[in-house]
Amino acid sequence: MTDNNFLLAIESGAATCGVCLVRNGEIWGEYSIFAPYKHDKMLAEFTRRLIADADISFENIAAVAVNSGPGSFTGLRVSAAFAKGLCLDFIYAVPPKLIAVPSLDAFACAAEEFARTTDAASVIAAIHSHKDIAYIRRYTADLQPLTEIELVNSYQLDSIVEPHDIVCGTAAFFTEKGMKLSGLNRPTPRFIARLGMRLLSAGIFTEALSFSPLYVQEFTPKTGAKKNIVSY
Image (cartoon, rainbow, N blue to C red; front, side, top):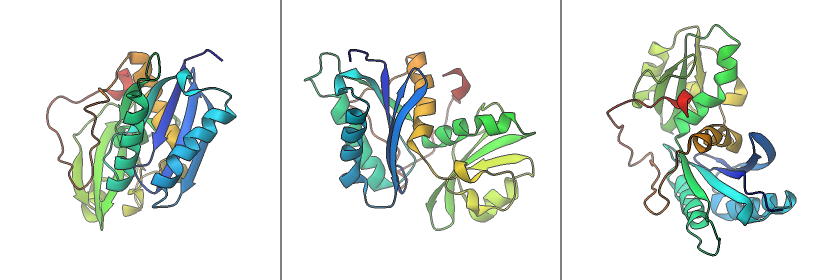
């Protein structure tokens, strides 16, 4: 097969380790394991198996989308090194492009359909950091960012959630308030793929050699202009 319109999406920012293969917006396959400390053992094997089962080769991969954090230090480190290796491997005539997918934006993007079918006031993506601390970002119902990334505790998150807010992400359990779907609380590679395809269509790539994810331990919220994930 000579088609090189495939996107390989990688998720390992939390306990999930998984890969997803997408072509023209359609998922061709996905492998995941929901267990910690398996990323270094399973990521390459899942990728090899998925490529083989799809009956393509690595030369068919146009881009590699990877969770860029915030998230687990170990998980992000493993997936970043793996993704960079694929995109810097000069045995390919045309190496894949690297697409960095922010984890909070990916959760918000995954909640898009839910937001459209409810009377959601806004979407709050929340990722567990440690103890009762979470990284959060609020978006409009049509996914326009309303805030920068913030670091809050469970009490603070609970205090800002309104009944008609959608709360998604690994720290959604911090609050009983708001609207939730269990399928939006655990990261999967298809979430990375969904936003990754928008970035691919818009030609938004990251330099593989200099790419470094936003590790939870080292992460400092950035200031400046807000990005519109809907325009990706």
